[in-house]
Image 1: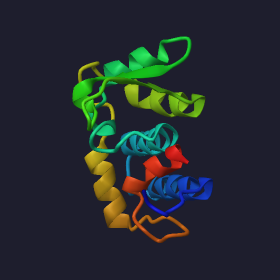
Image 2: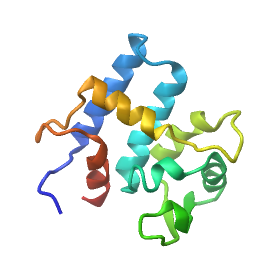
Image 3: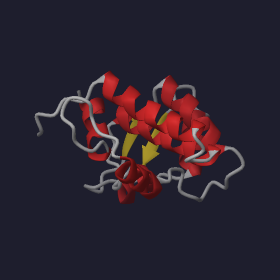
Length: 144
């Protein structure tokens, strides 16, 4: 456990940095939608960035949002401890992932996780209170 607290303001700060980069032309529409979806998915679900989020497919997310109560079926190979589980999706997450599914085949990875991590690293986006890098701490928002 860590003593770092991730607040709503931290999440908003990351989303603002992504929007600013998009408005300035630093990232294109596809990256903008993908990075925003990664942040919201990570913050609301608490899933691990590389062990799970980076491994989810477009088909899994498409299937999840087609359900009455959207929930992703995370497969054993997509989980750090190899345990299949269900991950419910908040309506804000559903709204954020819709643009990244459009026109993409079901078998490709949904999130550009490594690209997002590199972008965060190059742009020094940090948590407001603890001044640490964001990526690993999005889970903490979901856990809190």
